[in-house]
Image (cartoon, rainbow over all chains, first blue to last red):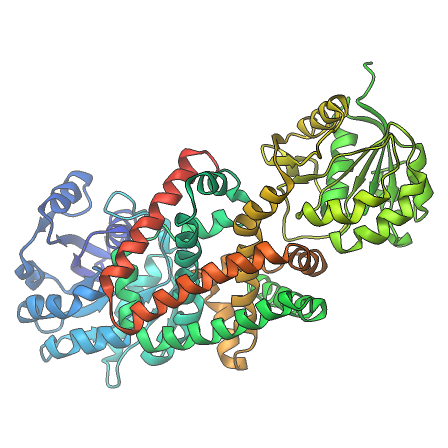
Length: 294
Length: 294
């Protein structure tokens, strides 16, 4: 039996992502010797023990003190308070990472609480489903999906290598990026699409009852794809929009200008403009298929 | 061997939908004795014969004269001209239908060309993929999907029954609706989602090159779902927006108001408003799952 990458990993916040990481540790040998669950809800801790996803579980932040890898997996709005709670319990040499969808705000909120000698390496696995909670996770969630690390200047290369090996062992494709750049890229690939999906489904919820029931019946003609996205965790997404505010507002602005231009083309019957855009967007789909991301 | 519902069906416009109907006739016994392909492109006619999807194929609209069911399956922008071309060749007792995504404009464009004694029953199978052309069709396309007929007042009930039986034989779930109501329902379930997807993918095509290549690489985080929709046939969709203008402009207006409200909530950090909307949209997803449309 080889020594695992980490002796004991603490997962703080045991939702879809946290519980999927724990399942990777359980199912894939060599990642970590044991898992500690830290969650503010005792019911979640009980469930995690019942599911056999950790051998220790509790609400006490001091539990992280015996772990050499600590993964923060709560909604990012809780990170400032969480940093203050766990910071004092982190021991020297521990790697501290997170799975938040925004990286600048995580650095702002966690950074000040990281003691000297602790390796803080922000991260973001681009994986998820519309389901939430410790029962919804599965080990294959990260398989073939990107995991982006956004290390700060001066990060210990050995710590970066170990964290990279951990995620690669979960099945992720690894990428390193500047945190501010990460937030701009994700604003368009993830945050704007989610905001748009929430908006269009919200627009439908405001329809009169009969129309709403027909929208549900005939949802397969396009609308349905948006409802899956718009069923994602409300608190997680509230926190993403509030914490990537500038980048999100910038892409909303671009999107709105483009939508207004299309609206005007429809109003004035400018068929050529519409056809020309709809032809250009096909090319992006082809690029995604060529990049094997489809 | 039982007599099929129709002796010979003409399919005018042999793209994804037209060729899928032909495949149904070939694969499911009892729908029609034979298929005639009418397409303005000789290359399409040649390909259809090669694929064995019709025993007669040509560009001449007079070919419809020997058919007792005629299905118009071109983009709807061609319908006014098409009506004038085929109208004179329709024989008494023939059922004339279409597969267009807008029904009021089809009635406006085809109606005046329908000779007395021909049963004109507009229809719309809610089925499709992002692929186009005669090679992209398949018989299972309509299986379990809705097909909406929008008969005009005074429609012959026997003709309506025969057309209903034909689509049901293709696997469709049948529904009858007022044409104007159809156009309003589809504006929100289908036309707005497509317009939004085209817009967001268009916004991405305007990004600088490096950012664009990263959007493609990391598209799996939400953006990708939109690119599939935005790869739909450009001419077909141009025609839909131009021909359902009023209903589409009305839903764009509602959508824009809702997006502006969300944008404002993000700018001012109104987390409760965001969370409350994101919670309501989850309920719609559950309704869709309950309605077995997910």
